[in-house]
Length: 173
Image (tube, rainbow, N blue to C red; front, side, top):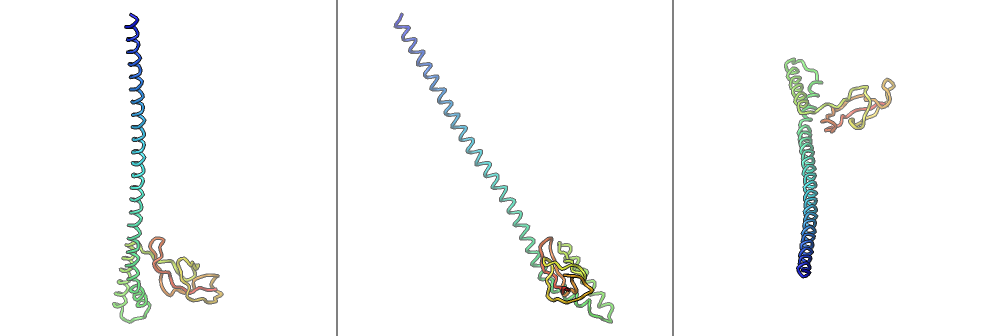
């Protein structure tokens, strides 16, 4: 019986050892699987973040391209605006001619407003702002305050915060 007992104990030990080996293998496989999962998850999160950044950057570039295109088109129309403005300042006896020029100017200004173009505020008596105004002359005038617009030579325009053309002005004092 002792021989059978020894054999039985050996079989029990082998079974226990096999069970331990299987458990170690399973734990090792679980660790490897967890690492693979973490690596793939990290790659996925990074890829999603890259895509989101790409999408935002593309949207900003599209907006900038649109703004630049509108700005370029408006710059091409500004000489027409200037000529119409000069035509309105000239005295004429033909009322229909003057009305036609006024209607054309109104239509041009409305068209510019519809695409987001605004006139830069440059009225006589307002303060000079180098961000929006271009001072081409300087005069001494006691009636006007310090650093004040005395005369407007050319109207300025902007789209949002972007200046298309600075207002050309004369500054007092």
